[in-house]
Length: 109
Image (cartoon, rainbow, N blue to C red; front, side):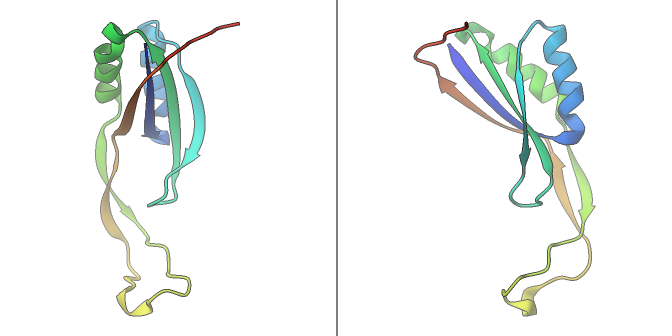
């Protein structure tokens, strides 16, 4: 058994949740915050048998697309202001960061 931990952008959260339910996968959603952009994200925890891992990865890949977005950088607090860029920059957001871990034991009560 594996535990899939997928961190996705909030904009993709509902679409991914619906797609997982449609394919009969149970998932736990946790609110989280990204460190780089300090933007909202959602962390999904999905426990599956080994043979179902690729199916879940395909669902994540099909529902969490990367996209370019203009963001205003956070001003440096006590940092070097010489390298601070005061205007919005384009960065790639979205997609998914996925971790797959072996589960030694699973209990449901």
